Length: 82
Image (spheres, rainbow, N blue to C red):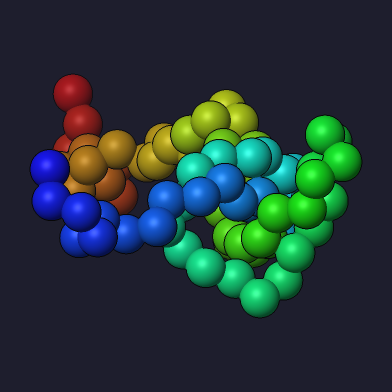
């Protein structure tokens, strides 16, 4: 591999701004903010809007459309069902 063509990959703390959930991972993103992790070391802090802690798919709080499709809605509205 060629030297000096790859971005700097370093450990950062990602923090979900909605729940406060934090996790340590690798990233090429840079941040001026820092935070101390459980191991006592200081890492750059990156705030995110959604993480696995608050995303509906991972939390099981996903909303499903119970109305049905357009045809079902039409049939229900005009009593044209079976």
